[in-house]
Image 1 (spheres, rainbow, N blue to C red):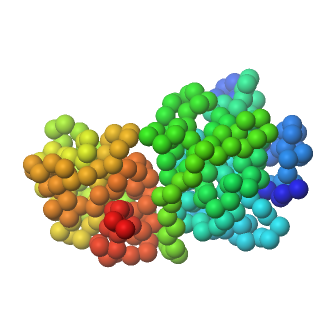
Image 2: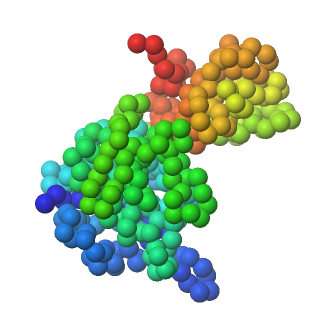
Image 3: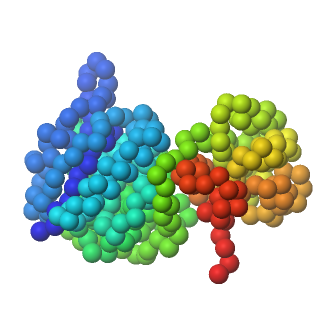
Amino acid sequence: MKKIAIITTGGTIAMRHDPILGVIPSDELNKSLNDIPYLRDMAETELFEFSNIPSPHMTPDKMFDLSKFVRKILNRKDIDGIVITHGTDTLEETAYFLDLLLDTVKPVVMTAAMRDWNEPATDGPRNLIASVRVACALHSIEEGVLVCLNDEIHAAREVTKTYTSNVATFDSLGYGPLGMVDEDTVIFFRRSLLRMHINTDKIEDKVALIKTYTGDDGRIIKELPDLGYKGVVIEGFGRGNVPEPVADAIEELINKKIPVVLVSRCFKGRVLGVYGYKGGGADLKNRGIIMGQEVSGPKARIKLMVVLGKTNDMEIIRSYFEYQNK
């Protein structure tokens, strides 16, 4: 029987409903772990509590500490895989952060719940059971950090929360799931080929994420250096286009040696230098912007934080984001 470490960080999966305060953190998950049906028959488990916080309270520094915490457990020879419980709101960011930093063949699966532990029809126990199954599965080896909820398996790089309240909230838009859990069977449809490992002993958390909008005058972007930001991710329109004043503001930052990464507000597709008008993707490319491809804004920010922990060289930073013809 395989041994799976279960690391708790908090989130709705570890909360209970209080009639006065609402849904609040508790130790329900820790107390109830041994009572979850089927779990003890699937694997030997060992519980670790990293934190007990709502996921909006997660920070890059906490993510970095979590990566070191997870790595230490992965180095144990008796541990075959890890399941991490987390709040849904920022799970996709933590999952991608860990996917970039953890270099391991052992399965690491993140899960969560949309309903608190004592709510009717809570999804927490089922998600936890499915995630332990995935962590035990042979095909989960060398797949990086996986996300498992609602019986679907997603890649950390691709998955996003799509619904505020539905238990089927996580989806990989434009990709689809990697696989599924069907009762006691774990089925993989495909592999994720765009994973990347970045070896760094620090991160740069002063990275801003700015969504462009019609009429944006770029003034907020111009203020970012004075606020201490060392990198910026811009969510542009469509293929990667911005208003003309925003293009000028971006160029000012680039001239100050601040890396600016461009992604799209769209849910699907990658940015590309197609349009040559002022503020178009081709114009921005000529000004020195870094094309962030098809990753989301929050994940591009995560990646830039990690890369800036390793290097300040603009061309090396660019190489981590832009596809190379091989």
